[in-house]
Each structure stands twice: as structure tokens, then as C-alpha cells.
Length: 342
Image (cartoon, rainbow, N blue to C red; front, side, top):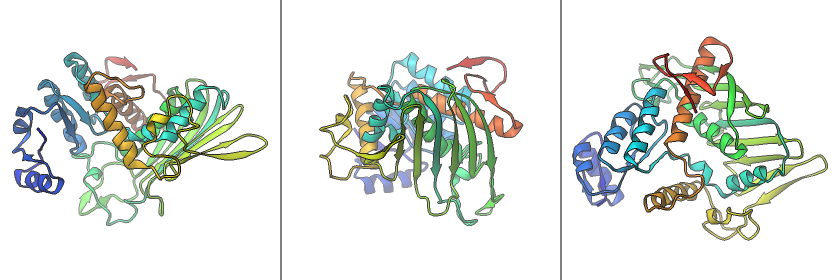
């Protein structure tokens, strides 16, 4: 049975009518009492931990929006609970599902670009550019201690580690909050982040994340420079990859007929027919539901990836606060004693 719950029964009813969902649940208890197999947690960040914990305790599979939680300790607890309950637990890092992201990953894995030397990545938006722009994410009570990084920087880092097939091991960062107040309330998290990273291979690079870059709507870019070639993906031009070497550069366009092994399945339509974000999101959901049916498909982002994103978030905030390099491979938990290696 399909059902929907919201912060109030009247809002749930309205949303259910708009979306054509048969049942509007009164609250989370009503929702979990139903016979649904999976619950999507799409609520404000600060509620993810408590709601997702209850979903897992009810024995249901779960897709939880990122951030998985607003602290590393809570994210680790959710991942442990999901493993113990043996439920499918996924986080929608959906940019993994662009066919040309998978193509880039396959080419990096094949050695086409050679050993990774440097990287230049960014995620730029402008929806919080003006002082009157406001959103629940701007308060720590709802959004958590990080906004720009937790909201979009987490996507960028997930994509970087996914395509490069290696981890960020050290980083330093600076954050900026431009307006101290939005919509009559104090702003408690950052508008922009600049990060220098070191990868496991020794490669170094920069990441710029901003929700105040005028004219940039969803400019997620990933550029990797190898000893043999460079490769670049631009989310606003998702049908292509740029590949460059010393003598020439070229654009490679999505084509399931010529795609690398295992990549063609991500092309939902023939070459020349535009495919974009919604197709990527649909691909993620399809893989999550396939996992529930017992078919685990390579690359499905799980709660382990959600924990990784929260770990990086805490590392970025700590680096900015203390103005120093942070070793991301070993990071203290929120209570500052036990250490977790991911």
C-alpha cells in the first residue's frame, strides 16, 4: 500500500491528493503500521535520525535523504542498525546514475587517464544569493551545523570518490557565511566552502562549493587530471564528457552502442534523445527497489556512503574552525573518544 505522512495530517492529505497517493497517514505511527515494504525519509535534516531509526526498528527498508544524520555518531548508529536488521538502506546520491558519470568511472578504472595527479571540482548554485533568500536549511535546528557542504558538497565528494575510486585522506577548508540573518532569523551555517584535498594516491585538488554563485543553477563539475589524459563531467551538460590530452581534446557523447562495459544499462533512451537528472533519480530508485527484491546492483549508494558524507562534513567544519589540516581516514566521533576508521 502506498501511503504518505507529513508534519501535519492536513498537509499529508493535500500532498497525497496532489501526488495521487491513496492513503494520507496521520503520523509516523500510522505510516509504519501499514504494509509498505519501504519508507522514503524526505524530511528536514534534523529529523532524519529519529525517523529513520524508527523505520529500521519496524523492519522496513529505507531510503533516507542526505545528510543521513547531523552528527557522525548518529549516522554510524543508523548504519549499524540497518545492518543488524538486514534491511536495504540507501541514500540518494543520484548523480552516480548519470550514464556519463559511469562512463567516466569506467575510463578511469581502465587506466585511460593514467595515475591521478590533480583535480578541480565544484558545485555552484545561486538560490541563496540575495539577503531575502531563506530556507529551513539555514538554521541549525532544522538543517544542522552545515548547509552548503552537507547539502551539495556531500554530492560532490561522493561523486569524486566514486569516479576516482579512491578516498580523500586529508583536507583543509575555509567556510563563509555572507548574511548573519535571513527571513528574520539568525543564520547558523555556511553559504560557501573552499576545500583543498589530498587523495589516497597522493593527488591534490580543490573543491569550491557555494549556494551564492550568481547565474549558476546546478553547476556540479568534476575534472580529473591524470598522467595520460584529463576527463571532465558537467552535470548541466550530462550527455557528454570532455577528454583532453597533450595533442587534442574531444567531447564524448552518450551512446549505449559504444559505452564501456556495464554502462549501457544507465541509458534509458536511445542516443540523441535527451536524458538528465530525473532519469538519474529514477535509476537510483530502480536499483534500490531491485536490492529489496534480492538483486544488488553495483554502485548503489548505501548508508555506508551516508556515513562517509557525514564524516567529511565534520572534517570540513573542524578544518575551517581550527584552520588546520584534518586526517579524514581517522576522525574522532562526536563525543570525542572512540575513533572510527571508514
